[in-house]
Image (cartoon, rainbow, N blue to C red; front, side, top):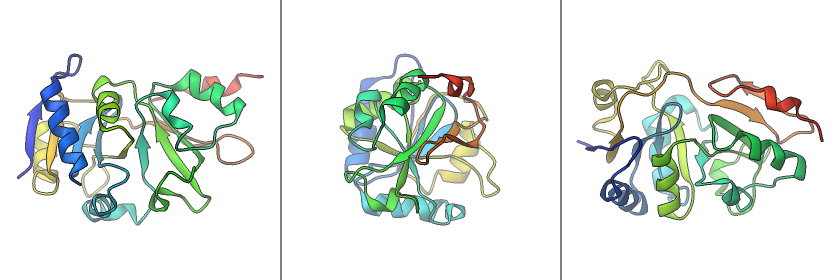
Length: 207
């Protein structure tokens, strides 16, 4: 059964963060809060852990997973960002968005889409940011859902569905039920893939 730690959403206990980082470094899979919904994740450089996530959520059908960076300055190491797109990133992050960007070589190819792009997030959530910062690199992220794709946000349902599948759960109380807004910047023009928690008015920003 997964270890569950009740972490403070605004003032997270560092001993809990450190425990989660230890699990991630050892190739474990965790559940953790973001600014939208709970995320199922692992260290992006732990290949076996990534395979475990696909096994835990077979409905992903090998679709590329997104990942969380600690802050804006980390993104350039993992994605190719033009000057114009950087302006959008600066406006949107940290926030409830996933940006699909051309992948950099640093990112494992398992996380690439067919267009050689990756989904990147910088959530407005101190726990998620601190986890990525303490780990030293990004954390894979996919939403915590049931077998029907319904988002789970309470302790009982998360434990029922994932308690025997993951190694650790950082529980910070009920979250929302709306996932991030996904915007594809890997082509010539931005494309809205999913309208979620993040508003998209900033796409009207001109040079």
